[in-house]
Length: 227
Image (cartoon, rainbow, N blue to C red; front, side):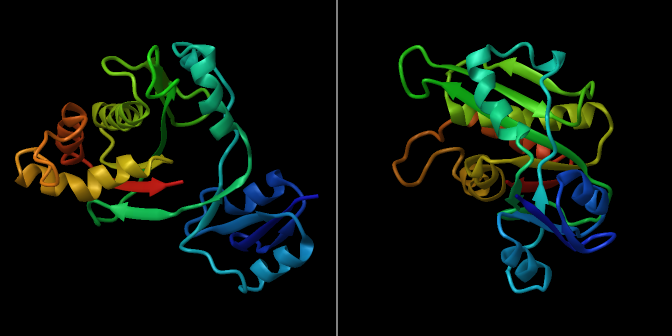
């Protein structure tokens, strides 16, 4: 039996169901909560004995809707699995490209590639905003079919949609550390070196997408969250 612990929320405590827990933390600023398998572990977390990095959150269930029909079933399977389980995750890294405060619109971006790195690979990406949200999208990836390019394309799609809908503060949640580090750390050095890697004097991999990310994130107050 799982135990859902709300350490910071409307009513801190230990709950038996995700629905009960969700009511206490949904849209609650600074919420801290986590799922445990045993009651003693849950009690320790509630009493502040289990450290967390910043916040502990739980993914909301995602159901496949018409917005996801563009990706073949074998590609969609992995992405749906990632976002359909109501299990806890920790925010591993939070990086703000700009620190101005504001109301952040949250988008989940994900890319996947069937047979990544092999002949015949097929890649796609999706962006999830909310259940049956009109901005939800899923697309086949054009160009080289790799997982990294799919992850980058998903982030680009989220930013483009935000900008086209006059969103100024965007939080992108992704499991791609490669995307986050590229957009917030490595990209500065690449720009200074004219998109040539100093390590081997070769062009930066996925330069076309990196240039696009650099262009788009200049137009947003952007927060990256690694999940």
